[in-house]
Image (cartoon, rainbow, N blue to C red; front, top):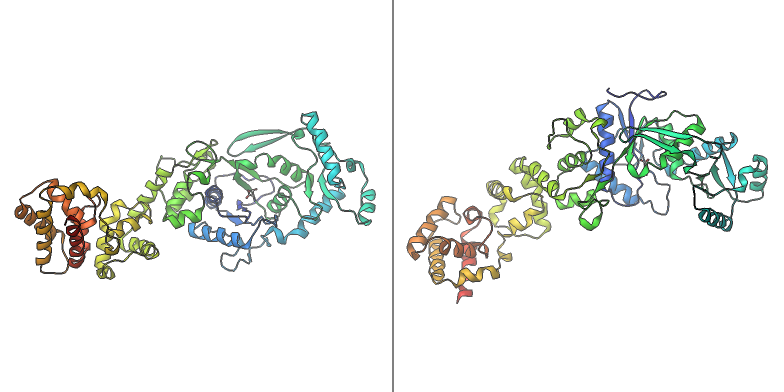
Length: 500
Ligand code: GLU
């Protein structure tokens, strides 16, 4: 293990703590990945905790989706909810905050009993007036509650009358700077008056994020909290709670934002951001993990392509950059292509096929043969960056999708084109077998060249139009061996009919 632990900790334990209120954003997945890499690099444990106290926004549907994406990525956790049954697995259950409400209540009671927190009975109107007062002062002022002065007995008497209260953490006496040695950002200093007496439990008893986060991180023995930079300001409140409970604090590392190429926070405006969408678009999980690792971390030898095992072996926080990481979509595609093409043809075919089926592509009956499948993959592989690219590529083999594009008009207008097409048709018709090899195609092309007495683009462009309906695109020499005599004849007849 290459890290030191804070006093009170015996092993590295990290967690990913998503709120199941939507899809798994690539920024969240990157946090999960970093936590997993850090834990595994240090022979530790990686925990999945579900922060579902926002009952209005949390859904089981979202939880299932997030879990499915994490499983797809292979970001396997040691404790948390079971990926299949969604039941708790691990010694610190329950792992869903909505099932831990009595735990938070107990801790809140302890803070209240020790004078670290108090019941606050301010009404909405009183709060609003206090907020207006604070705003008018326009400095580092915070909402002040008159109930901070109350004794616990006074408060209890009020509760006994059926009044409801929030529980606030008392901050007034904490007059000092809080120092955080952030593992990524270095020393961060928080003056305590950055915050006022903040809420721990709402009047309906629901805990707020900062409170349950601390309770759970402590109780689940989390030694290192690696999370998004946007939580940095929350850390002050969290440090205060640790101190109030006299609990050992974990170490924190705040990971920079993922940015779009305009250096704004990565958003849907520029393309997909959901892991689920990347999966649907035909990115491979290995490529996404590799790409996410480079969103802030760098390989010690500057390598771009590396496996999960290599990441685990090499991942240290000193190589994590504190400045924003740009999500370069072009590079991501390039990286995916590297992973995709490195696989054997059978694997690629198995990955591509569902996309073709979903797109309703009709392939020649030969496509049922393994030899055809492998040949097609070899043909299209150099153009395949993501699996969805396969649809347009294989579509050129679907007769029902054959169309003569407007781009073809120029070639169709050339004087020798009709002779080229007629000779081509005759040669195809005369071919002895139903299918063609690349050599067959070359021989036929040569025969057309002599027969129609043309060469260069006057020869190959009309042939291309006769095969794929357009003068540019995948080399026909490679496509013809994937097509049948009948298909080629259907196509050339359509072109000849157009020519009149
Ligand atoms: N539920 C919080 C989030 O999704 C977790 C933050 C944290 O890791 O402390 O942003």
